[in-house]
Each structure stands twice: as structure tokens, then as C-alpha cells.
Amino acid sequence: MTEVRDAAHDECLRIVRASGGTLAWHVSCYELVRSLLGDERLGLAHPVPRLASRLLDSPMVGPLDVTPEQERAQHDLMRQVMQTIASWRASQRLRHIVEAVVDTHVRRLVEAPRPANFHELVAVPVPRAIAGAILGVPDEDQEHLGVLVERTHDDHDRRGASAAVSELQGYMLRQLRGRVRAPRDDLLTVLSRADRSGDGNPAPPMQNLAALILIAGSVTPTSVIDHGLVLLLSHPEQRPLLDDEDLAPGLIDEIVRVRSFVPPRPGADPPNGLSRYANTSFQLADAQINVGDLMILDTHRANFDETQFGDPYDFDGRRPTNPHLGFGYGRHRCPGANLARLELELLYRAVFRRLPTIRLAVPTDELLSQIRRDGGVVRTLPVTWD
Ligand code: HEM
Image 1 (spheres, rainbow, N blue to C red):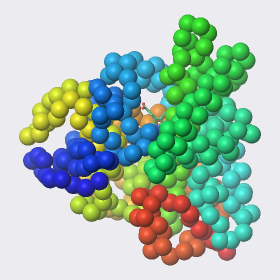
Image 2 (tube, rainbow, N blue to C red):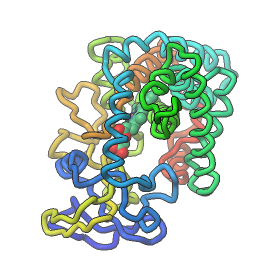
Image 3 (spheres, protein in one colour):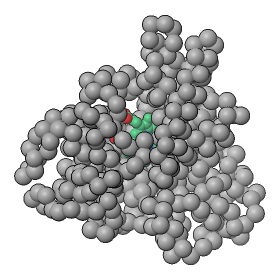
């Protein structure tokens, strides 16, 4: 994606070229990104989905094939159900699941030959196993589901990615039907009760939500876990915060704000962010937004906006306030945020307690070229220890 021209009054809003050559608005300053995330004139639906611009050629970031009204109704229902994991008290109830998964995988890391691939041994399986356990998917299915989740994000194989999304949804539908017959103490059972289509079966939004929880609960946390480890390894002065239960949450939120050990380079990186479509035409400063326009709300750059964050390029777990947008904002704000915070806190604490001398086993430059080549994604993270 490339910048086409400055569109409006300042750097905040520009027109860029989206996937396939179509145009989109790119928004990068904090106030405007936050206000547009809370703006009801934007949504995930597009009046004619096949004509919609896309940020990436991936089924995970395209428009929803519903009207804005249907989107809102389905989303309201989804948010109600997600309360199960959204509230802090609820995420504390899930603590024992997180502890057990973290313990298993950190033990595997400790026992692995050195150098060990932290990405493969910890960052990928931990969030996926936690999301799977909370949903209640059987252990023996986890590996196959993991392969499907990976395929949903394959930017080079759009058909394969769409097929993986459909297969995951079909799998979840079978699980939900099973829970209607035989309820258990898990999130799939909650979902199976949430939306019956009149014939006793769960309706499509719930199978889609179950698949979304597995995908969203795996892919983004994996990336944050990888990048957060590199941030902590390169800022050893911050690590003592992890041992203080009152201070650790500030450090974890700083990891989510900074998000990558490679800070954004305004004007150099391709624009990236959360996709929204205009449901109506409106004027935004000097810019005319038309119905169906794609708006890319760049929360990553917004999190480095110096009007909000003093010394934004410093990684500082003691910021007095940290109103970052790393978990989004508004009606789609991440319902797994508190669970994710808990995962990150317990995981890093366990890693540094068990392996106090852990360090990168490759030069940082090698990692840098890897993630620049792969669009910000870490694929191997070799670590070693004494
Ligand atoms: C560090 C980890 C995580 C980060 C940084 C993160 C970030 C985000 C962001 C930015 C959004 C908003 C997307 C948008 O507005 O378009 C989002 C949505 C979502 N996240 Fe997370 N997330 C994390 C972990 C999780 C976990 C652990 C789960 C569940 C187990 C989860 C489930 C979801 C779901 C279901 C949505 C869709 C919410 C909606 O559309 O209303 N996330 N996440």
C-alpha cells in the first residue's frame, strides 16, 4: 500500500492505495483515530461487499456481508455473550486455565535444547491453548484447529484462507450442536444458548463468534508475546516491574501500546490499522467521506502520538497514564483485553523466573530483517540461557 497524496489539513488523514489498487483513507493521529473508532457512521459492513476496498487481500479484514443494521444487531448479541470473558472478575475466574497452560509450555521451553524457538514453543501454543480451553474444544482437536487458524491469515492464498474460515465455522457449529444436547461448563455452551434460530439450533452468528474467539484469541496475542519478549530482553531495567503485582499491569499495557520492538517510522512504513467502512457520507475536516469508503484507523501510529504520550518512543512501564488504543476503542474494543493482560503477565513472570538469563540467540539485526520481510510478523525467535 502506498501513499497517494495528502488529503486534508495535516498528516492525520491521507488517501492511500489499498490492496488491489483501490483507494482508502488512512488516519494516524490519536484523537481522530479514537473518535472514529467510536463513530457510529463507520462500521464493518459495506453496501456492496464485492466492490469494497480492502486493507489486505485476506478474508479476516474484508467487509461483512450484511447490512449495517444487521451488523449492529449481530454485534449487540455477540457483545452480550462476550461479557462472559470480558469482565475483570470473569477473567480472574479463568486464571487457573491460564496458569496451567503457561506452566506446561514454560516447562517445555526450559526442557528444550538450546537455542530454542520461543515463537514455536511458547508464543504460538500458549494463547491458542487458552482460547481453546476457554471455549471448551477437545484437546485432541487443538492441533488441527491451530493449522486452520494459521491458514486464515495466509495473505498469499486467499481461497485457502476463506476455506479455513469456513471449516472453522463448520467445526464450531458441530460443537455448538453437541452442547445443545449435552451442555458443559464452557464458553461453547454459553454460545449454544445465546441464539437459537427457532429450530433448537444455534444460529450462524454464534458459530462465527466461536471461530472469531479462537482466531482473535490466538493470532494477535502470539505476535504481542513475541514482540513483548524482545522488548523486555532489550530493556532489562523494566523487568523488575513484573515481580510487583501492582506495577506489572502498567508494564503489560506498555507492551500492548508499543506492540512491536520496531517502532513505527512515519512516512516509511506502509499504512496499517483497523478497517472500517463509511455507512453514510459525511464531511471530516476538509475531506468528503463517501458512503462505502474504507477508513484505515492506524492505532499503532496513534499509540506513538506525542500529544498523548510523553516521549512516545521510550518503552516505559511506569507511565502515569496509558490510554493506548492497542485493544481498540468503542463498540469493537477487544473483549479479551483483560484475559490477554493476564496471559501476558503470568507468562513473562514465569519465563523470567524460570530462566533469569534468557537472551536472544541471534543478533537483533537478524530479527529486524526477518520481521521487515514478513510484514511485522515474527516467525522464529531463537533464545538461549545459561
Ligand atoms: C494482546 C492481545 C490482544 C490484542 C492486542 C487484541 C487486540 C484487539 C483489537 C485492537 C480489537 C479491535 C478490532 C477492531 O476494532 O476492529 C480486538 C477485537 C477482538 N478481540 Fe482481541 N486482542 C487481544 C487478545 C484477545 C483475546 C485473548 C481474545 C479472546 C480470547 C480476543 C478476542 C477478540 C474478539 C472476539 C474481538 C472482536 C470484538 C468485536 O468486534 O466486538 N482478543 N482485539
